[in-house]
Image (tube, rainbow over all chains, first blue to last red):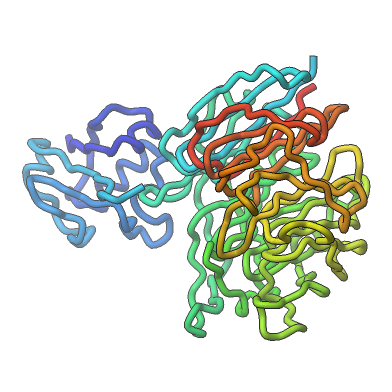
Length: 98
Length: 371
């Protein structure tokens, strides 16, 4: 199981707690993780990545095991700790004013 | 007993204010969607329990929420707004062409006859329609064919903020776009043309005959007289007596003809309301006095409505979608401010009282008259 930590507003939107667990068949990549997340929680479509381009939204970041994975290619393998469920994949709303 | 439901969109959530027909005691529900920008909440004229809300954030983008119980519960519906075909380009600040990019939904306008049909006015300017209660959205691309390549965003963004449906002609819709102008379709949205003749362009456009590029702030119509339109433009309050074919100025004795919203009285087609703002450089009421102005003559002659409104040191703004009316026998008028107050008048504007004073900055106000 892969563990995903969502920011407050997306937890509220999806009606879930701080962390959700996802089963991914095949290689654990950012794209596979987000596909699985959106399949399970369709209301999150468009909130983390663009509907059409599937590009990460500008003020969303991906953190895991102390690293910023935001600029990693979507098909790159996720860190082993994330793939095995030892560490969560964190979807983070970037710090911004307002 | 009949009553009213006031739907308030703010910078940090939605609020629903309800009262009986006396409009003295108010129940305040919210914040709904706390922390999100709610550009607009609107209800179906044929099913008052059906509401739609535009929920957005700089982080998470656009969501559309729908309620089937008058705002007690909500469910997210489709938020996929994809321009039809190749999105194309519009004029950019530096004179180059820039691709259309969806940013947010400014306005949701439910159909006058079908609760599952709703229009969405978006930024970058386009009109979308859902026929399944928000479960899917399709663009009406003929609008952007109306010289869209010449449209250019103003400082507030290139937003389609006004949608006026003609109750006597289901094929006719008016829309307005910031810094592009007013447009009309007579074939249910297939084709559109600019309807901006007669709009003055001092300080706004170099070409007096420009078909597009006019900064329309809002348009209002009385359902009994759908060919008569009132417009608050960037500067100037305008009127058309022929469904937008030609406009003439009716600013008359207003202390400033700059402003954002305009509405028409529910029962008096010649009674119009505006909220003058000092200027495009100073977005607050002239002299620090919050005054709604009413014309009972269809424009030109205006009276200040001040009773119950702050008449000193008031520097709030009233945005384009933040003035609304109810349809009770004694017509109610409502507006919200960027300072978070929502004021109501149960006597056509003669006297006012705040319903609530300390909401987040108000973006929009709509009113449902409940049976």
